[in-house]
Image 1 (cartoon, rainbow, N blue to C red):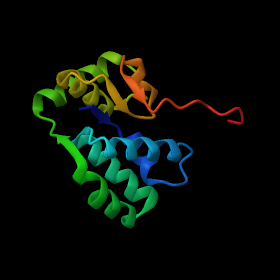
Image 2 (cartoon, rainbow, N blue to C red; image 1 turned 30 degrees about the vertical axis):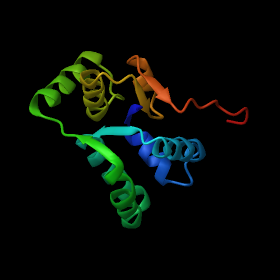
Image 3 (tube, rainbow, N blue to C red; image 1 turned 60 degrees about the horizontal axis):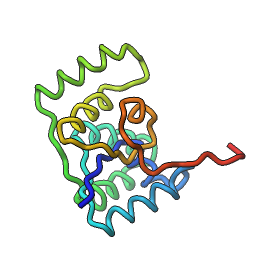
Image 4 (cartoon, helix red, strand yellow; image 1 turned 135 degrees about the vertical axis):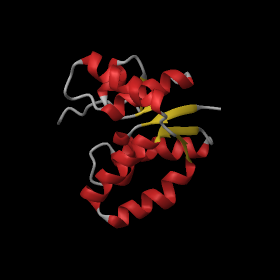
Length: 141
């Protein structure tokens, strides 16, 4: 059975029909559900996603996230050790645009032995993970 980590960038793309990668996000999401893949994220990813969905799309979209998406996720709760490992990774990378949530995700993925991530965030690829779906940029973008 496939096991894949999911990032905030993918969750936002699934929920927002106006997102430029929404069609490919929905297609992969539906494929993962059909194959009964294990879709994993941290509680930090959920907090980040809930906050962004509420601010960008409103409470109706938050309700959709909570009722339709969260129940199929395997949520890995961040403990103190993972939190501080994420902080250390963040500091060692020395880059402003990589978030603590991303760094904790990297730590969790390594602990869980996961290589594939459902994400539209190049930081995962920079860390050696395989990002799905593979999006080919259009000639018009």
